[in-house]
Length: 87
Image 1: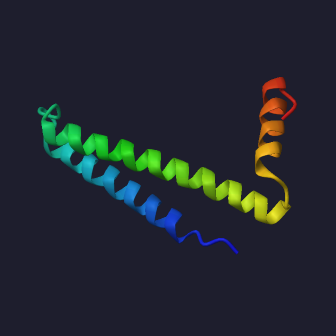
Image 2 (image 1 turned 90 degrees about the horizontal axis):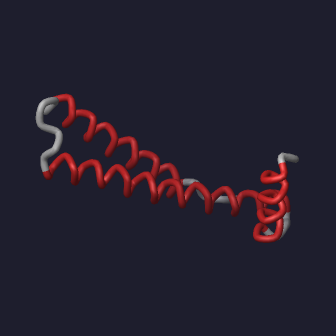
């Protein structure tokens, strides 16, 4: 059974970074081009990228565990089918 605790933590961190950035933007409506805001925004982007990658890896592990197939070959097949419009 897969442990989704790291993914949940990543999602919580992403939500928190979005909330903090939104709060800062609300409080400083006229001056959101500050270095602090750019740093907060970069943190949100980094959190998103990390969470996206972790969710993709978790999905691949879940598929491999539940359907017992090689994710590499089957994902290639799914991509080809998707491009052709079959999926």
